[in-house]
Amino acid sequence: MKRVVIVEDETAAAVNLRSMLVSLIPDVEVVAILESVEESIVFFGQDVDADIVFMDIHLADGDSFRIFQSVDIDIPIIFTTAYDQYALEAFKVNSIDYLLKPFKEVDLQRALDKLQRLTDAERGTQRQNRARMVADVQSGVQTLLVRYKDKIIPVGIDDVAFFYTSAEKVSVTTLTGDSYPVDKTLEALSQQLPTDRFFRANRQFIVSRRAVKDIAVWFGSRLALNLSIDTPERIIISKARVPEFKQWLQSVHLV
Image (cartoon, rainbow, N blue to C red):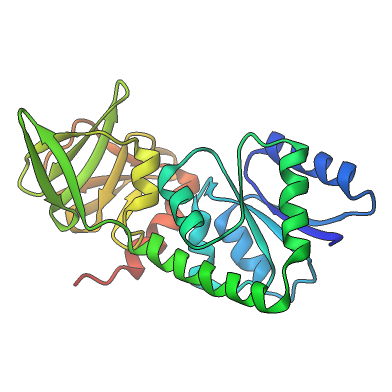
């Protein structure tokens, strides 16, 4: 278990993991450190000679589960993540290895030892479980339960126009203009919503494809989204995320 690939967009986290690996496996070779979904798709689309992949769930250009939509990775993977109950439950149910950030050397050693003990049959089962988990995560939730006064109201995600956060409070607005508070962060929602129908536009918004009316070219090669209903502020897509947004928009198939 000497050749390692690290998928991590936080430089400090990647450096720390590499340092731990060198301490535990002196002759370890870090084959590559990848920082994005797109970079990972290109890398794993080639023949990769590696023994293990450490993969962060949250990357700068989206969640790493999107990588598996484009390429098959026939290499054992240990996911790394900050606390995300939805993802952790998915890992536990499917017996997928993960490390919860911030982790220590002893945690890393335990994960490596567990992986070393796996038989070929168990590795094959893990790959199958991982594929099922990714499919389940990507299919996402279909209904949100929101509190309104003294009631709990089900909101179908097909009726959602956008999610918005301001002053650490998150709300969901439907296509009919109704707005309700949501007891989840945008980060958590972005991991639970179907990735083919929802896009994390920026720090303030997650938008539904059904709500996108048109798109304007904005200053600095950015994009401004116009939705079918009014929004609390203008929705801007950064220049760096424009290619990802266009790809998402073009690949969506509405039912």
